[in-house]
Image (cartoon, rainbow, N blue to C red; front, side):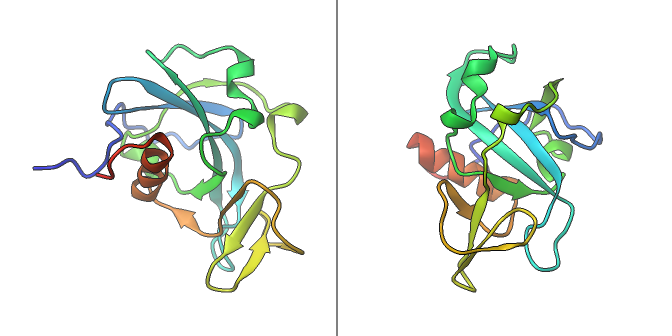
Length: 160
């Protein structure tokens, strides 16, 4: 039977993520990707407040040791910023490994998400933007499955 995700289950947690948390996810080859919680009060749609805005960084690592700050730069994103809920943590696909307070250079100057249904662009607070500002993410709530798909596509892996 095929696994439902390429991401491996690490350690489930009921602890709510906080802005600045660094988390790790494990790929099928055993390597790890790091991500960062940017906000825990994003708006993933007209009636979806309280979403977790995350970044996923491109560099792979052999383990869970937190890399140097330069590897976790807003300029080294693997995929566009995403908004999700707490399930990636509670199911164990994301494991929080450290906390570093966010500094101004850690966060993109502007987040932009496309609402495909409405054909318009919004920021993480639900404010409409005049047009696209790269990198453009999807305006909506991502599940751990759609995060897995986006990461897999970006890395050239077959979808689970």
